[in-house]
Image (cartoon, rainbow, N blue to C red; front, side):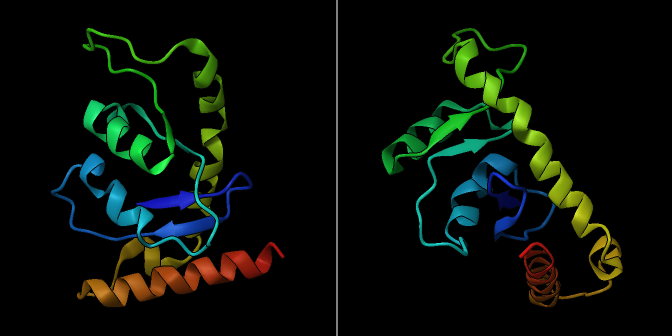
Length: 131
């Protein structure tokens, strides 16, 4: 998982196995922030539509913006905050930038800490390119 700022530059990255759901990894990813300023908003896709996640992030002062799943009974967000969801392309652009690094794209490393080190190195290169 990764978190990017308003310009699509990485501010947190976390790697985990494929089995846990993304909602359970949000707090772990936010603990890996590169920056000191606290986040105000977190924009995610439909997988992040979770009431427990909303309450956890609200306690830390972060507004979760995610469209509702199709089977959701009670709607918690109106259309106004969801307009910010259109900016989600910036995180997708960051993941496209990560795919330019062949070692990240194919994951040659067996150990997770080696892969995460390469991902941090790729994030540093992306940040240096955009200075």
